[in-house]
Structures are given as C-alpha cells and as structure tokens.
Length: 332
Image (cartoon, rainbow, N blue to C red):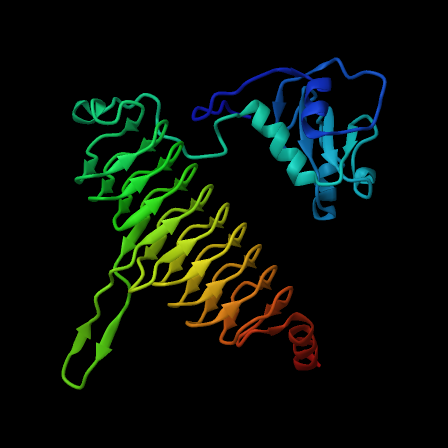
C-alpha cells in the first residue's frame, strides 16, 4: 500500500499492547511480536492486522495475508488458519480502538498544524489556533485549545467552548457552542430560518430572534445548515452527531446521543428524543414529537408522532413490521 501522506502513522506496537487496548480477553502463546499497521483485508501484509465484521467479505477474508484479524466468533471460519483471530463482542468498537493507536489524529478533521496564527488574534485568544482569513466580530468568546479553520466567520456575541474544532468556510452567528464540539467545513450555524407570512401579493419575512445551542460533544458534518430559532431556540443535545448535508430548521430540538445520517431534513419546531438513529435522506415534518430510542429508516417520510422505542420506515413512515409486510404483499 502507498504511504499515507496526510496522517502520521505510529507504531509498530507489540500485539499484547493492542490486545489490551481493545479489551480482548482470550489467550494464546505468542503475543509479543510487533504489528506494523492496521489495513484492510485486501491490503494487509504478514506484518499487519485487519478486521472482518461481515460474511459478505468472506471471499476476500479467506485470502488475506494479515497476521491478526479482529472479528467475531461466528466469522472466524472465514479466515486463513494461520491468521490469529481476536474474537470480540463489538468488532467496530475494537477496530476504532486499534486503528486509533496507529493513527491517533485521524478521527477528527483538526486544523493543519503548519498554519500560522493570525497575529491580530494572538493577544486576544492566546490558546486558540486560527487559519488564514478568519473574521471575528465583537464580544466573541473562544475557549482554550480550540481551532478555527481558514476563511471562517465568527459573528458578534458568539460563544465557543474549549477544545472545539471549527472547520474552514464555516459561518457561526447567534450561536452558543459548548465544549468539545466539532463543526466540519462549510457548515452554516445560526442563520435565519424559513419563516414567513404568505400574503396574496407578497411574502412577509418573520423575525427570528432565537439562537442555536450546541451542547457538549456535538459533531456537525460538512455543509450542514442549522437555523436559529424564531422565538424559542434550536438545540442539539450532548454527543449527538450529524452527518454531512443535514438541515435542521428553526426551533428544532434534538436530544442526546443521536446519530443523523446524510441529507436528513427536519422541519421546524419538531422535537427529537434521546438515542434516536435516522437513516440517510429521511425527512421529518414540522411540529412532531419523536420519542427516545427511535430508529427511522433511510429515505423515510415522517408525518406523525412516533412513541418511544419504535422502528419505522417508508413514505409515509409506518412501523417496520408493517413496512416489510407491505413490501412482501406488493412483490407477490
């Protein structure tokens, strides 16, 4: 495999170190030899480790040259006999732990270390790193160890917490950003929502005086738009992750630990519970209440409230069992 020119690679690491990091509890005779890289099934060599988490890849896994493979007990049979199998309960979690050992800075899009701080901000924000052409308004607060990417705009009275990463070409206005928040390139946070009064001869814009609140640990993908509230606030709860190109309309409130895939859209004033998972290109209508632990399939159109612990799919979205039943009936 060609050298990775974008991320510094660490290692090699003794296998026993990796085993400890991923929480593997099994035993085998020799765990002192070194692993030089974490690679895909195709690219791994006799000095590398890899992973297998689906039988879909069995034709590739049976031919892998990797010395070690993180997998599950039911998939071990799809690996060469000489390959050491590390059977774990959560394969992808173990993969994350192991790969982060080799590439400790590849899990987030941090600001390029080679960029020079803008001289005009150094005295004001001593422990903050800036890219080029950053614009900052009055009364802006930025916490220590945060980074602001090139060509981003932080408008007046915005607050950014500690250890935040704001990408390039980001616009922040009317927003309160908590600690450990990551906002990727091109996102627009705190812009006016789609609020207007439709009259016969002319649409009249409605004032939006609310703000956007991003709580601790939130991640916003690239090119997302999060509208500020009209009277209430738009809020995204702790540790919720948004994929790229997600739109959150005014007054929407999203709970904690949610995972929102790409191109999902939320209409105004909808409330999303905690631990909600939404597949790509789903749409959620306005003024709805989506409960805790709900799963919404990709491409679904949600037009009704959803109680806690439900799985829905389809357009309009219906309970998953009903959706599957309808599909089978249509296929007959």
